[in-house]
Image (cartoon, rainbow, N blue to C red):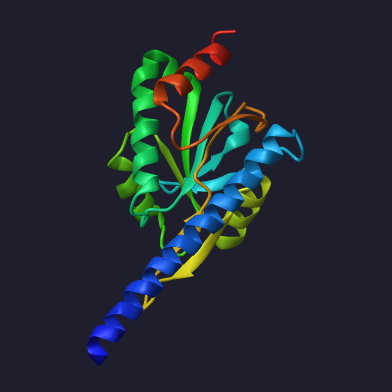
Length: 200
């Protein structure tokens, strides 16, 4: 009976934690969406971070528009889904993809080393640029872009996950915000938006 009660308690705790993290993330996500829609303190800015090849990526040095996503390599669901979408966008753009920088920036610099980023990004598309850095460097970029993320311990094990914003940003070569894309938007619509910009 005691084992059953403990098991039920653990299940309840897991469900409660999952609901809490989902609602908290959803609240933060709606906050940035409202901020963008109100044109109030728009996200954006340049950054200098370490790329998956060990070199430095300076967003100021490129004249390409940027497709930005913040996530982490241990992410079980939303990050792989979004990176598959990003790979699909690159393929659909064809030759036009040469005019964009598709970028994945980690929000878990503690675990996401250059090697980890390289292996992870390589599984999705060779043209995606994976970036990592020190915690202070990542904090700065996340703040500039209004990206919420929070380390969350996993109960019962010596491990953690990261609750984070799940939005793709589109920016020009000056690091200025152009648009954002929520998780459920189809890649074909993002491709259309990008083509409208680069073919002006």
